[in-house]
Length: 389
Image 1 (cartoon, rainbow, N blue to C red):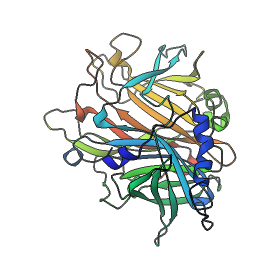
Image 2: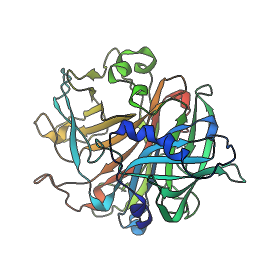
Image 3: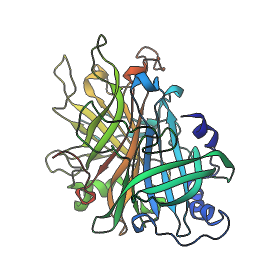
Image 4: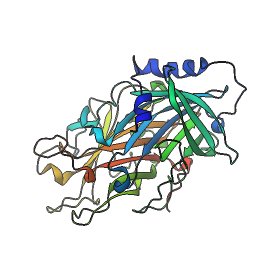
């Protein structure tokens, strides 16, 4: 992440439950009384994914992603606590859970990106308001502990209200949604933020940000409200243009998340883990290319830490080469649950911080173009993601 963001990030002490409890307290002590401000879409508590993704010719593989909470107050103040990762730091995968789901789901560690199982790694305090053209302007002026930033950092969000019968709202960067493909328009400098952030998506409600609001894995599989819902969304990602080393370039693409599958499908459901709070699934007939003809993809989702945190990991089964688990270049995806005003689960926002590692050592190998760095939503139809039909 750029120097301004690195300088502003602070290590948040204590348990995450204390961090979330402090969100309101921090903004409540931000200074002199301010005039009442309308909460964005009438919603106080948000889960937000933000990042910088650009062509490799411009970014030199310095993409970064950030996932966290925004808490807005009626006095016009706002605070965020977040986890962030920078491609140049080459963050690695770490074991978070063990998936003992049975059936054809292999018993393997479920991995996430290092740091996500601990307390948030940074935070900001600031103010918010509306621009003359109706966008939500969020201006970060200090670290979470109150130390002033050298320069304010402002984000300009498109705001969509009235989702899920008025129980949720959404914020997006200007070109977050659009057609799937390899020609995503990267916003010009200043179009979305005054610093390097150029893509973002978030969802807000008035539900608590604490762990008590989080839907369990068993609820997602067994509750008909959730198990039958195909969660879908958009994934904006810095990646290689193709698998051909002779011609590929570092680009920004847009893919779909989720799909037609559901967690509780009668014929092919996700399976709950017997020990840790997670679930797994073997998805057949995917885009995984395999000389042995095995095109299945192994998928896991689990609960980690406190607050609204989940984590996702998936990999092509053929990569395990006959072993039960694949230990190298899986897709690790930290997630935060979207919960609406009535406490119903509506999906996730998330990030991917994929560092390519050598299959001989398991350590980062500097193969920058093979990375996947992006942000996404994966939500219910009630939240009306603007994705291609």
